[in-house]
Length: 62
Ligand SMILES: [Zn+2]
Image (tube, rainbow, N blue to C red; front, side):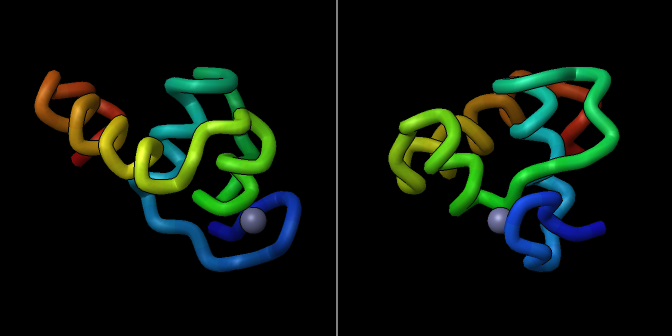
């Protein structure tokens, strides 16, 4: 699994965050850097969101 924009290897958490922020049904994903650029959300904030969604027990985050 790689970023659809820059081709960087993707962590599953990044794909899950993409689903949460952009499109749940998406089959292609942005890495954290490209997601930050796209959403205008700083990367440290995106990392917080990953923690936040994980603690909610979202099934996308295993
Ligand atoms: Zn990327």
